[in-house]
Amino acid sequence: MRSPVPAARERLDLDRLGRALADAVGHRLWIAYSGGLDSHVLLHAAVGLRVRLRLDLRAVHVHHGLLPDADAWTAHSARVCAGLGVPLEVSRLALTPGPGESVEAVARDARYAVFRSLLRPGDVLATAQHRDDQAETLLLALLRGAGVHGLAAMPARAPLGAGLLLRPLLALPRAALADYARAHRLRWVEDPSNADPARDRNRLRNLVIPGLRERWPALDRTLARSAAHCAEAAALLDGFADELLTGLAADTPRALSIRRLRALDDARLRLVLRRWFKCQGWPPPDSDRVHRIITELLPAAADRQPRVSWPGCEVRRHRDALHALAPLPRVPDSAPLHAAASPLVLPPPLGDLDWAWADAADAKAGVSVCFGASGLRCERTGRPGAALKGLFQELGVPAWLRPYVPSLLVDGRLVGIGGVTLCDGTLRWLRWRGHPWEDRGWFLPELARGDGR
Picture (tube, rainbow, N blue to C red):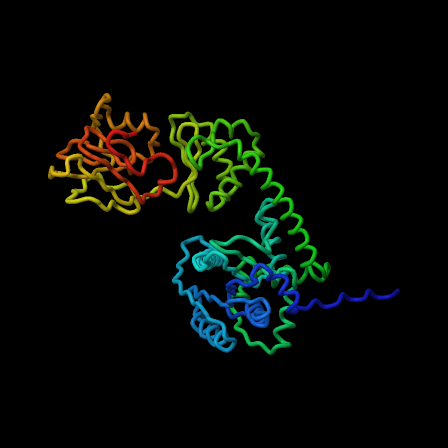
């Protein structure tokens, strides 16, 4: 019986790479350069395309501050880029992962934060992940119980900050990159942490995948194909979720209607919530948090203030609206801030408060700003007076935001509430700006006499 003919070894050539970098033609292309084999191959090959694709080619190296050899890698990167005539941007970090945090995840998140801050409109960033990386990513996602979006692994093209992320080597195996490096006599650095079996990806790469590949030689190709199928399914689900979301908006900007959400079955609820968080730019919640939103937060009575939170995001409700927002800052001190002049800078991140007196010639003494004060009353010109709490309820300010709203007082008398209303005609106008909730519709950026809220 004839032995099967082995498949031809795949190669990295400039024509193939040029097609994968088509989105970068005529633009500034950043290469994420670590100094390792993969990124060195990508940088070297991109230099060969610089003229053909009219690239403004640059490299970015992130010094994470986590390993003792990092300074040597940065120096190596500088030498390589200088030899190739590629400008190098070095970003130095001092990461300190907390207890229980994954060093790899912390480093990855910080690295992509650097990339996002670097890119300008029209810029492209290329990273050097290849088909073997894609196989590892899919297997890790399976072992962590990911859904179809997680099993889609890494896309070849995705938005990143103000620019675009490309992975132009994703269709090639690592062997093709190694062949290119040997053919061009490239020299690179080796990260010793890549051999640490305590790291999940290293354990898969060094201990698990070799055994699987003995039985299934085309493992990386078939797993990459599965990831592509999952990506196609994920795109279809995203489109369906977007259609559902068009009918779920609340009256408040960037919020969802709880009443409409509760009309969906659990599967659709989970789908639209995850899609909503992604479209809003929040870090994705795990399955337990999504379950808590559905079972604890949505059915809560309208006068309750439940909250579900995870790093970087929290979900709250107010009346019929579901809100996702950054975790609330520390509540300001109750002691009043004495204001010698306008504008007054408020405790971060609450912006500033600016005002003008109705009678400009009238010098005001005893001006102060306070937060969370009880017992204050707003005597509105031509309208019935109201207690501060009643005004917040009337005008729809969520209870969990009220401790952050600045109240302006003259000799202890309430004359205006930032973003909410003016009182008694003392002020000509009042502005509260630069706070985190300006785009939420709860507050007015400027209040002028006669048209208070």
